[in-house]
Amino acid sequence: MAIHNPGRRLMHHVPLKFVAKRVSGGSHRDINASLSLTSMIDFLVVTVVFLLISFNASGESPTAKNVKLPEAENTLDMIDAPMVAIAGSQILVDGTPSGNTRAIEDSNRLQRIDELFNILKSKREVWKQLHPGKDFPGVVVLQIDQDVKAVVVKSVFQTAAFSGYPNVSFMVNNLPRSSGGGGG
Amino acid sequence: MIPMIDLLMVTISFLLITAVWTHMARINADAQVPGPPREVEPDKVEPEKTLHVEMRSPDKFVLIWKQSGTVISTIDVPRKDNLQVKDGKKSIRFPELAQKIESEWKTVGQHKEASDKKLDQAVLHTDNETAYVYLIGVIDAIYQARRPYTIAGKQEQVPAFNVTFAVN
Image (tube, rainbow over all chains, first blue to last red; front, side):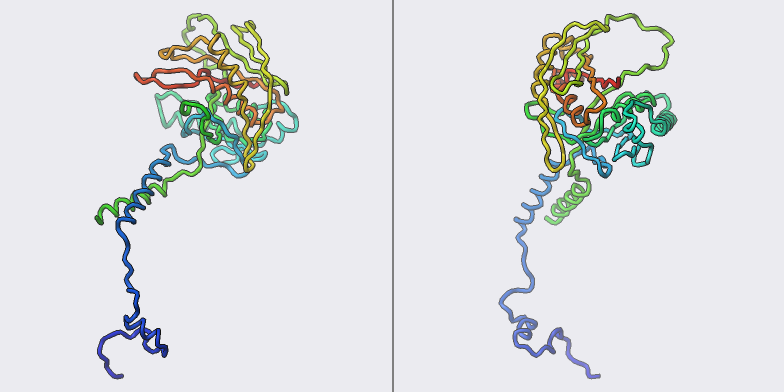
């Protein structure tokens, strides 16, 4: 095979004039496009400022599927605590199935949910073993669908209280306050 | 110039990765359950006035001030359920109830000073059929009343009431 001088080879076999013109660098527009540094830095700074303003240090709380939370104005920031979700008729503690509300709905009577009680109690004992000598905060967050009946809310609330979690927080979607003040 | 662009890029990446696009919050309610037995019985203190908010009737709320089981006063507040639904999310506000609770607290409430660490107590009672969204609407209305509160020399506005959810 013959040895050729080094040089541009790409697309040279294409028998079209405009292709030959472009690959030989004869086009009007430069192949290396320049970028305006000032505009790019402006864009980056605006993006950083926007993201910093919308930054939330308390993090994201996962919401269970099929749970539509109600909205409230006078709210507090989320905290790290066991999350009890009621999705349909299923009760989940930190995503783990922990009982069912069907019996409460059918009887329409307040009752203790034994499975939930046992799981919350064991979580409390684990916390006490991990933090010896510290006061147990007893906080649990309830993630309940907006249409759930009060008898189910009361049953879960009472079960949580009797298992050692008397400070209950209801998870809601935050609405901006209509008049003055910040979150409670 | 290049280190500055690098810094901006890294900052944007960090903020995008940790960004939270949904704004979840919580609303507090506690349960009054008996605690463990104490070795030393506490001194007897005078029972405080407590505001009981009853939402059992579809056309009115009943505000009852009680002191150790004795009814001090009863006020009826007309109930107007203005339920709003947006993208499947329901929200309900009770502005008349919030105003009445605030005016009641201003006249009967016992803990108003910024240096006072205790809050007045409100107890919410409801029937078994009420939907959860209405409970949140009423708790939100109770938390509307606010008072100054001094924490570590800094004054903040906090809810005037601490809400207890009655399960009976």
